[in-house]
Image 1 (cartoon, rainbow, N blue to C red):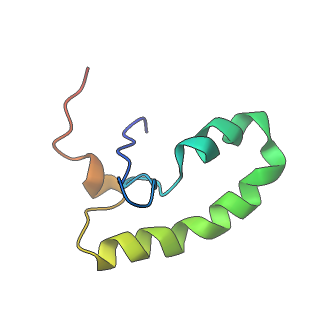
Image 2: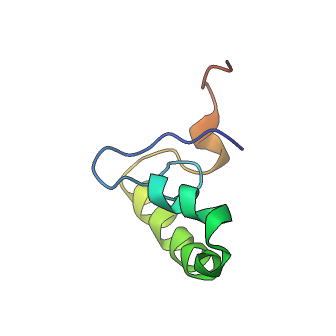
Length: 65
């Protein structure tokens, strides 16, 4: 999606829930993918509970370059 906007406190992307390190490891170390995927729903729920826009809604209004 290329709309990553990272939370300053947690380091999680508001759109996908991954950290910058996880995004880098995604293609380089495919064996990490299941663990990353398992963690994402809880992260997105936690950010939404704090009032952050998450998922596709997090990318709305972002300028395209």
